[in-house]
Image (cartoon, rainbow, N blue to C red):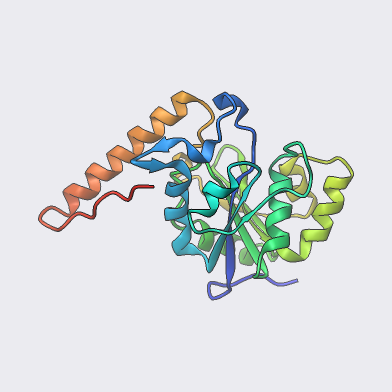
Amino acid sequence: MHSPNHQTTITGAILAGGRGTRMGGRDKGLIPLAGGYMVERVIDRLRPQVSDMLLNANRNETFYADLGLPVVGDDIGDYAGPLAGLAACLRASRHPWVVTCPCDAPLLPTDLVPRLIHAAHEQATDLSVAHDGERLQPLFALVPTRLAQDLAHWLANGNRRTGRWFEHHGAAIADFSDCPEAFLNINTPADQAEAITRLDTRRVSHTQSHAGQPIAEERRP
């Protein structure tokens, strides 16, 4: 067992395979946000941190593929949960580690990957999970592809609880208590409104700090 380092090639995996039940069954990755779709905000923040990317989805696969990412579906039917999405991404990754994040986290940390790697090094393991200071955030995780078969067996036995699988493997805890707002996920229309407000505030702040400089046009889907 060994931990990755900052030169290690890592696949970034976006989990967009859920039902979106609390959003009325909508595909949360395709919710409009900041002039585009929510998944595009996630892609923009994760892409600079990883070697390549893929996306787990169980519907609207053609649309997601048009964003330029390989799309993989769950091996288990009936929307078996995020662990099923993780299993699909571990199977499809071309690199020995995968970093996951959900499609409904448009404020995810821009240093998510290096901090997950640091936690794995510090705690002498090869997988780690984010903690926002109040609760574990198991959908933001660094996972070695060597655990793909283990996870497949876990799911085959009917286990679905994400946090329990990480606890079972002694995952390192990466401390993100300095930025808990980065883990805002969009489960309700109120969450969507809050994310828009936060993104607008950041955009205004960025614009003011670059006064007099050309401002790039907002990318449209």
